[in-house]
Amino acid sequence: MTATLKERRADVPEELTSSVDSLTATLHEVADPGTTPQDRDAVTESAQALASTLAVISDDSTPGKLRDQLTGVVKQVTATLEVGLEPDVPAEDRSRVFLVADRTTVVLKGFGGPGAPATLGPQQLNDIENVNYTVAQSRGGGNTGRDSQGMSLAIHDFHTLSMSRERRAAFADAIAQAGREMRVASDPESSSEERAEARRGMSEQIARMKDEQRKVASAQEQPEASLGKAAEVCATAIFNNVPEGDISDGLKDVTPRSWESAGVKDFWKASDEGNEVLDVRAQLSNDEHTHAPFQVARLITGLADVLPADDLPTTVGGEPAAHCERTAAYLEEQGVSAGDWASPDDW
Image (cartoon, rainbow, N blue to C red; front, side, top):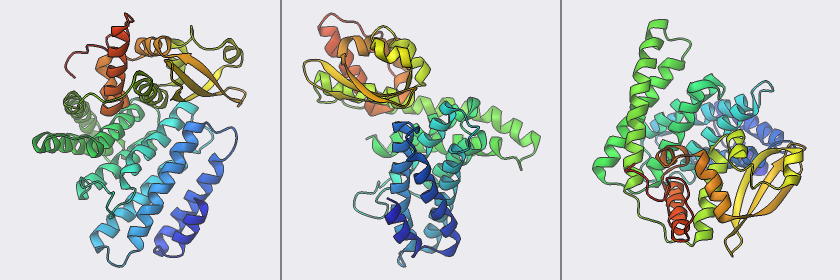
């Protein structure tokens, strides 16, 4: 990845060379063995998407207005990643900063090419810049950090899920309004009155955004996946989006004793092993990387205690939420209850 960035640096406008240098330095930083796999993956995926964006910026056929807007996005996301490296940022907040950058830049991958989302326009690029600005200002902490994480997921769902034209328009407007309020509320150059007014409006717009997100999720078709595959997608999404402390509490009765003695630093991902077993990979607090088999039923019921069905779409996204619901339906057929996941209220 660093070699690709070196190539891009030779072609980008001079105003972006420092951003490319910063991005390269960030990749070197997260290569440290103490970095969690989730954080390293998030930074690497962000860098890949930004490298793709840099190629578009350097292309002479790119319109000037688009080039300027993409330049602003690259600068902001790079600055956001820098915040995640600050040594006094708590681990949970650092992961949130990296997650927001990753979720929002992944839709830029292949921008201008055949695989690029057709949903990307000037407003959507503004949304990406706004949420990265906001999470950087909050350094991933507090309610603003959590709201930024929620908005980044809404942006990702907007670009990746199918929906009607009317629903897409309503969802786009809700995201844009929430992003504008969040930016003003986080901007130190805004007056105290402007920030206070924006915070009031922000709560209303975020609630509206989440409502639209649930409506989009409820319209998605059930995935054609086996129990193991559905559980894999569901569990990995929860590992990526829910605080480690909450996951550890929910899985305390199924976590291997050898993990408990060291403590789990990062539940990373789950892989379908067949026979209703998931291979769960984790990084322990002593930075040892390990894995162990988990029975699907016990793992999923533990995670269902952590995250109620109503919060699935706005915490893990519409596609993983559908896989969680599918997993719960399979377990229900076996007489195993996964909280309220099998028959959630209308999202």
